[in-house]
Length: 439
Image 1: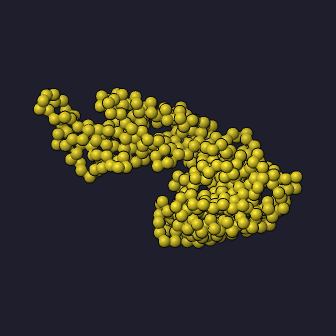
Image 2: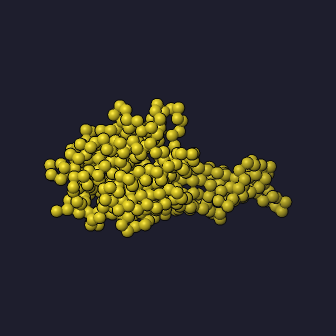
Image 3: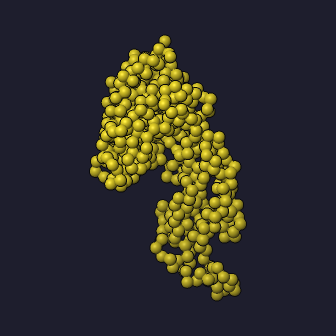
């Protein structure tokens, strides 16, 4: 084993309580994403970031802190070095709500150390992973090793609600980015170099408002003459037909778009929200949704639209817009009143990530995880989306790798202590490979 690597691993092993204690500290500071729940004392993201600054400052990191969203700060720390061998270690500090607290066996923000696990909301998703990143950097510094490449720690907010903290960070560019990144989301020790893209799209379908009492005039043949009332067109029924056609379109996409590291059929298009009614409100949704005596003239459908790592977003847009245009062309009304499509609804967009399995970063993590972990790692894709997408969208080469645990987004969340230690060691070893040791 290389002497530098041995020195770093020895520091981690001798001080293995550090990553555990740091994880406990972070869990004990509630940082529920305020977009999901606002309650006194639960939205302490700023306090979490202060605790992280307390860890990084003594290690010589050049710190920066700013509000990515109102009163919701990001923190970055940098150890100077070359850009060619630069690397980011990233984690998010926001967590989802506790849910039913009665379902928890322990205090959700107690950070208890029991049964070889740290318990509490955020323990595995993903304060444990972020603590492993910081502890890995600490071990390198404690071993007296100087890196050739710049090493950055990124602690961001809002991943659970769309990643707008990471988006703000990467859009700043410059020294906020690097050549490589590890995002320490929980992967159970597996190596994840790829995830599909995701956007939210809104389809607005237009009908023609009329009184429901004259619905027969719209659906049953009437003599067309000067006394005939102008028929209404029910936008909700058009939306129903659209959803049926969309299901077939989705099936064809799932059959034809695959990636070797992802489950077959992942290119799904989920109709997640639908509203129908009369008139258009200022937000582009139906204004009246409480009167069934009106033939509705507006229906809006919000889609959770996934696409594959190897797909280009412009091609995905074009394909869907062609489908909608052909669907509308089959109906005389919709030919003249085509549906409206809005992409990146509310700014939500996760670019695809497709780091090659033979990239040096992938191979480094896999090699060290194989040597260090109790469980053999596998290379696989991520079914969901993470902040790694936002780095990939800016040209950074990311990998998702982190510890094992249970209960994320559920009750009794925990992270395994042994896995925390292993994750810290693997990340530190990978940093030595990518950033290189200064001679």
